[in-house]
Amino acid sequence: MYKRKLPMHLECGLHLFMEVMNGKWKPNLIWYIHSGVKRPGELHRRLPKVSRRLLDTQLKQLAEQGIIRKTKFEQKLAKVEYELTALGQTLIPVIEVTARWGETHREALESLFQSPGVEQQ
Image (tube, rainbow, N blue to C red):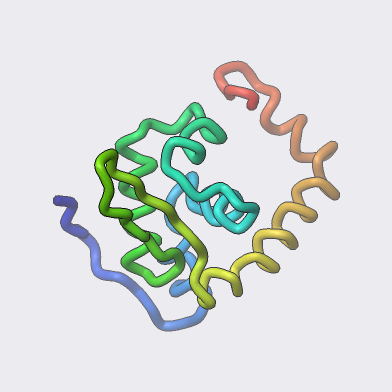
C-alpha cells in the first residue's frame, strides 16, 4: 500500500481541492460517473489509455474521499457500480468551467502541446 512521503498541506481550500483531484484521471472519472457510466469496465472503455490498476486505485481514492459511492452486488458474477455522492455532485460545475476554459483557449494551448514526444488524444 502506498504511504505518503511528504505531509499534506491543507492550509487553504485550494490545497484541499488539489488533494481530492490529485490524479490524472480523476476529473474524467467523476465526469463519466456523473454522465451515467457506472461500471468499472465501462469506465475503462471510456479511458482506454489508463491501466486497470490505476483506474481501480483512483476509484478507491475517490470513494475514500467521499466523492463517489461504490456499491457491490452480491450475485453469482460479482458486480460493482459507482455513483457520485452529494459532495461529488458539487465538483461538476468546477469540471464544466475547467473544460470550458480549455475549449476557449484551445488554439493557444494546442500549439504548446504539438511538440515531438507529446502524445495527442
